[in-house]
Length: 359
Image (tube, rainbow, N blue to C red):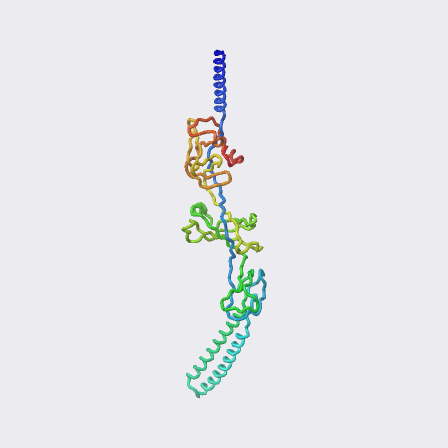
């Protein structure tokens, strides 16, 4: 009986050893996929939250005190340059202008009479000069009254859209009171903040005078007209580390309006970028690594620096070279310094089939 148990145990050990050898042989026969980074010219699209502003957006305020007699436009109306928008009761200013006109007429008559007397050497030259000065003063006061009278009518300084009316006819307004705002949306400015590192990439890698950008609107659709980056502000915000950019977009159909939001997509060219698949990388303590296959077919973890993040791809700025072989699949099946069997697949053939998650 004892002999039987010994034989059974021996068979079990031999069977386990045989299975283990077969498993190890199977694992040794499994070949993992390896590729090499590729150098190429490409582009990366950076997206930024943007604020839409009209190219001209002004406040229309009362220039004289009085009762608002009439509004000639409604909220949201499109108006043309010079169009009458509001009238403040002009009776007082009209009366003052008529009084000033009478003063001019009276001083004009006095000047003419004095000139005749001077021509006859009846009065001294200084009397004629005084009469002339009084006439000029009266004319100046008349011109001032005309200006005040014109201020009772508020007209559009340019073509645009009227915003909410802040006062209604019959309201007493003081000089400087806000009546409404006027927006010229024929062109649109979109402001967005760019981090310092991306600003440096933009300035060093972009050599065109005006970079074309696109606007993704709040409904996730692309605005049909591309814009151009024409202005970068002078200073960085020390608290956020950002600098404001301004892109100008044509808006012939008036679709965009002041106060909207959207995402500006800016394309940055990358010359001779070293590109690897994202799935070939793994992260440890917020650092990014790849497995590099050495001359002895052993995998070595190498830390890399990511320059740009693209769809399924990374631009690598340091850590590996274009001649290195990096593990593409089976990252979870190996550990540092493991010896592997592998197949090499060209990066051009890898790119169309990329998936984000490493196996």
